[in-house]
Image (cartoon, rainbow, N blue to C red; front, side, top):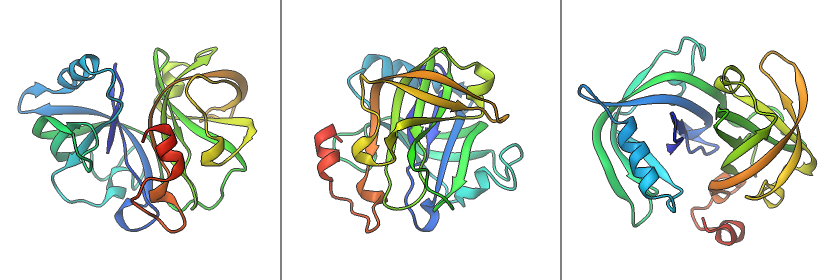
Length: 236
């Protein structure tokens, strides 16, 4: 799972289109080791290593991912799980460093969850917004292969409220087709249509800041663990 956030800790499951990884799931969590919170440990490490974009978490125990969001996101079957380690860097790539080991993860909120593949693929570029007004993120809405996973730090103008972001807003970029090549890039300022959980919609501006993660190969129609040209171009 990808770890992101500087005010609260969020986990974004790294999905594929088969087996136990066939779901897009975003969680707000607390990291706990005995009676000590590890949230501050993660925040401090990320603050000291601002050039490092990727932090990842490796679960220790085996469990069915859908237990975290079924029978419903408000009352899931599982709210905690044991973690092996929290890494600065990608846990499956060289150069990572474990900053915490053997701790528990408590899920305080399921921000978003859906199974893959999804029934419909939006024609326009679509993202899930989450976080807080001061620390907001956009995750590309994943549906069907070929697709891509992407996490960005963003700013909304005007900002969304804490309550809206807590449950994952949807934003559609109307003038962009839904492809990895046309994804939002860091530094762009774009017009978008924001859709709330309650069904209301409004126009906003989205300012893209840091691109924290981009993965295309594992979500292709024929998945590959080799870097794609777009991944190499973006540095991932």
